[in-house]
Image 1 (cartoon, rainbow, N blue to C red):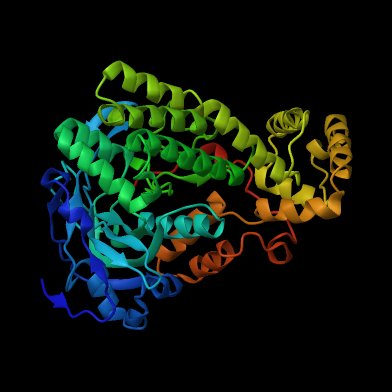
Image 2: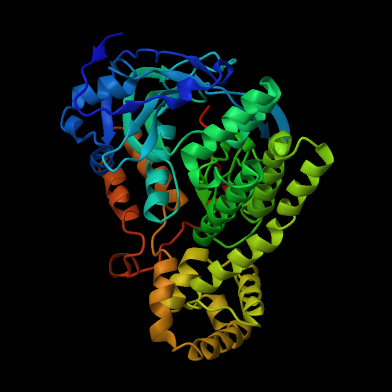
Length: 486
């Protein structure tokens, strides 16, 4: 495998200095026919990699894994995780970290190839990814970024010229994923299970120094990290629910310590409001349904706390009590942030007594009428209502009058509209649209995909998107399933 002379690569490899059981040095596996399908010019510029733009063959060679940039130190990370509640030793079974790029504005980000071949953690997997699933991650992660939700980013998709054996057989591809890091709750679980106390302590300090250096001088850094990550998860999941996003597989190995949305597998967006909505083919019991995401986030933080206990205190009982005191605040803290989020969707920025009832009554109406979650808030902010049963019901008319009276206390609809339209996207990547553009791209026509990429880049542009509400084909969601890609 040849190397590429650097121009503006600015590598660092701090993860390489951690205990060796946390990773395996691993070269990407070459592919037969790399061809660039997508390249994120704006992101490349932010990373200091704009010197590559326009060099399609070179980009395809590098980001397929066929060429490794000089200075990169490819490795696969080890981690563990509770998958659907059951503990497993895992690791990067189809992903390889090239290194940490220091950007022109002095930020440190991981550059990872996903679908780049087998690693020591692949178990029975082939280490590859399908073109369709990598295009999906590119599209959805970029949509989440433009929705204002912390997320990994997608730099490139390179098709491999090889087949990937799934059901059915599909074309293969490699995605280049950019993230603040790929450190997970499951990484802490792995160190706890496979390292010694010194390893766990060293890893704690590494994570704090990398992501939350302000915590390094606190009295109890492990406890402070627990509180910080809990806050990040509450903020993240609340934002998911603001736009109707369903992650689909909230295992602890998919929970980023940096508070980003990562590992886009069987994710989707909810159309008709129903907290029980599930699209993931592997979530047969609804563990990760839309409305369950807050309590699963809490559950994941309990697991995280368990991995930190030896660092919180040498006394097991004291450590458990301190962690429990923090964890017990989760429901209250989430509830407060959740209702503040929903009230902003209603144009209300200052919470007062009775506002929770206003929200709860609305959510009941939306669920009862199976109202489209996104379209409802667009209609409310534009005051353009259809003839759907929800809007003509006496219950909605009563709620609507109560809401308008509440707005009159804070300056009326004119003041509220700006708040509402900043918090309610007029455009989301609807499931049927996503499937259509993916199928078109896999068949060789990328035009619809690029059109949708442009649309997800301006989700709050009401001038463009709110001319007519997004419609969902009747019955589409009732049989819709998303898949993990492995």
